[in-house]
Amino acid sequence: MSSFSTPSASHDTTLYDKPAPSSSSTPSPREPEQGQGDPTTLPLSLQRTSSTTSPYFLIPLWRKCIIVLVASLTTLSITFASTSLFPLTAEIAASLGTTSLDVTVVNALMIFTMGCSGFVWGPIGRQFGRKNAWLAACAVFLLCTVGAGLSPMAGKGAAFRIFVVMRILGGLEGTFFHVAGQTWLADIFVPTQRGTATGFFLVGTVFGPAFGPCISGIMATFTNWQAILWLQTAMIGMSMILSAIFLPDMRAKQNKDAHGFKQKLVAFLKDTNPSNVFQVMCLPNVLLTDLSCGFLSWSQYSLLAAPRHILNPRFGLTTPLVSGLFYIAPGIGFLLGTIIGGRISDMTVKRWIKIRDGFRLPQDRLWSGAISFFFITPVSSLIYGWGLQYEVGGLALPIVTAFFAAAGLLIAFASLNTYCAEVLPKQRSEVIASKYLIQYIFAGAGSASMVPLIDTIGIGPATTIGVVLVLLAGVLTLITAKFGLRMQRSLEKSGGVF
Image 1 (cartoon, rainbow, N blue to C red):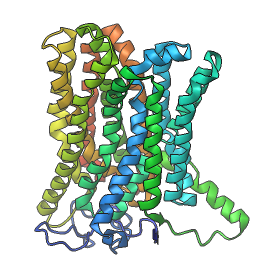
Image 2: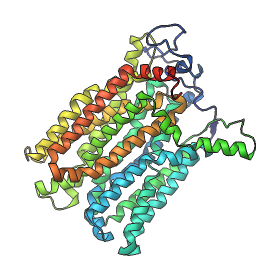
Image 3: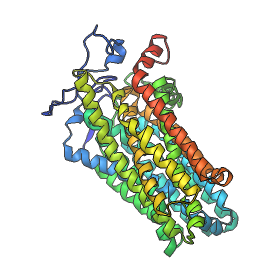
Image 4: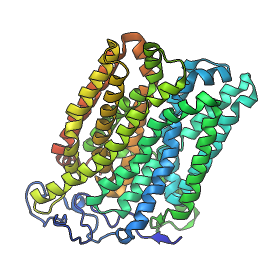
């Protein structure tokens, strides 16, 4: 497989992108001339980083599709692992000599550590190449999954401790696949195609959390819980092989000023400095977007964390099989939501390009999720929660409303994910990493707290908390869509972060 090497992000623009010529009737986004007014009267440093088109845009479409597929399959493996053990806490606890609450906390800790993976694998990717880091992360995750599967053999004294260590170390590979995958897509797709490409890539990230519990619930009915981990081992092994064959090796230009050991050491320490991720979060538009993703993720993982706890006593279910099948409804909702949301996101960008006579702002696509933030997800979630609270509508009601709540969440997510890949092209990886850090902190909190919340205040009030967070995420997103560029410019003028 050929290797690519050009300067990192030199092809992209910070606020305006110029894709390759197309026969589409949609005007190509163009860069502003100096002196033009609202909203394009910008400091030069924000207007562009280069006026050249990326050579990666010229990669054949068939190969781009393969890259999307392989990247999505790899992220599927790690996200599958994040929730696949949710319905099996009782069985795992009995096998390892601990309690269901302890297993639930371990699952939440794994999700939390997924958000921190950018601090570990991001610097490795910058030093040794994105593809090499990707393959190394696959190998580590595979070994940790095998270790977790073999943990019961250690005996009940050490088994749980080994299980905890393997799950947490496995989580540390987590969102690196999300960050690197989205960065690859932003490198090879023009702006008016990125939303759709990101939507298909995110199929893997949403299929895993939704269908992991479904598949594990079915398998655990007929075999032991370790079989789920052997399935995960096969999934990541196959993904690793496909990644080695098909993913491109796109390397950033090395620092020519770093001569000698001391200079190289300084360059390495600078590159591995985690403050790069926190620095971009000082931009208000980035921070508001990260918080929006966090609030949505709370709702997403709280929806997935408790179905067995909720459904089994209410409907007399006695095995993980039926409650596992419940996950099919939100799973299909997640899949359709991410694909439809990505397409709507790109359509919104094209509409704003026409309105502005060829100008494009990254924040334009944020308008596409309004109906999901303020109608689809809140209404569906409230009916889901309070219907279960008062036990009306039978099993059909939570199934149908879970589908619409899940679809609405991912339609809302779609524009936010692509915006993070566009808003600061030269620091694209750091922005995406900051998003996943906040997102998985909230995801871990949601998955860990949902069952205690339900036991304390009931499913209706617990779901209402998630609805309030979704509405708040919608407000923050619209603020970013309306004022994000103005906030970023204000910080720059005041001598802020950049």
